[in-house]
Amino acid sequence: MLSPFRPSQPDLDTAPKLAAMIDVAKEVNEGLKVCAVLTMCPSNPAITEIQDAQAYLAQVSGLDVIEPCVHDRKVYRDAICAGKGATEMKNDKATKELTAVWGAING
Image (cartoon, rainbow, N blue to C red; front, top):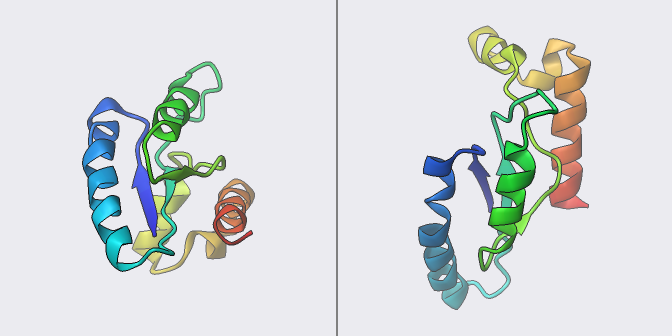
């Protein structure tokens, strides 16, 4: 299972409830793997929201926080309007991000 979080307090506040639901789900499916990915992240490297959110989520039981994140890029919105996947939009940054996320989940 992949659970997206924005690196913002309202999103992160949902993590403890998600952890409780994961515990219940693992009673039925012991092999359930749950990864957390940060989405809509700021691209400004001076902002520490990504690191802060990753550190917080790492403390939440049942979540494996993957390091690659998805930044807030216009190409993702454009892809939806074009009826395409972001990797079809010929944007190297978006393709690199999504490939890294896929690798972290499946690698």
